Amino acid sequence: MIKEEQTLIVVKPDGVNRGLVGEIIARFEKARFKIIALKMVEVEKTLVQKHYNHDDAWMEKVGERTREFYEKHGEDEGEKIGKMTNKEIGKMIEDWSCDYMTDGRVVAVVLQGHNAIQTVRKMVGATYPSEALPGTVRGDYSNESPLSANINKRCAHNIIHASGNPEEAKFEIDLWFKNEEICQK
Image 1 (tube, one colour):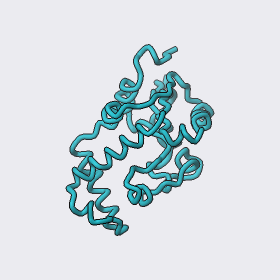
Image 2 (cartoon, one colour):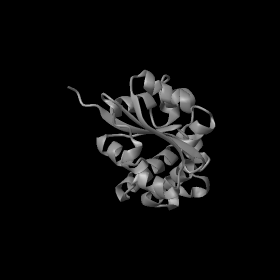
Image 3 (cartoon, one colour):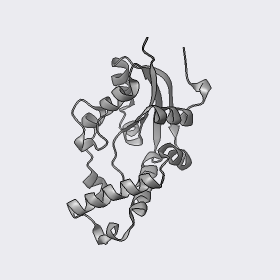
């Protein structure tokens, strides 16, 4: 018998504000995933910081990718990025992500089903909506690009978060939900 997996999705403030929660959740139900926990919350910055759980290696990697992006597109207003270390850039991106997630209510959902983590990630689409395929949540409901986000000095508004692997899913579910909030039947 194949063991079912659990994964977390979070409909971010832009998805909630646009009234897309029902449509987004319906996609996962139609794909035969069972909702075993669901709640709407106003997120505190400390929860978002724990959720992203960024370490120095993450900061370096994101900083490097962001620096490359700015160099490729020539978008470094006032040469700010050029004067920062990769770690400082990563911290800036983390701050932008925290600002985004705390900008309004979010809806956190635990989904359960066969191959849930990988399948849900495919259904969500690429991180940047401008790169997400039609038929995915991000591809259908947003067109944000890294360029527009960076020019506006914020992270890309990409509608939804989905856990990336089993360890991340367990960590995130435990962070967002108490055991008694999850229906295990």
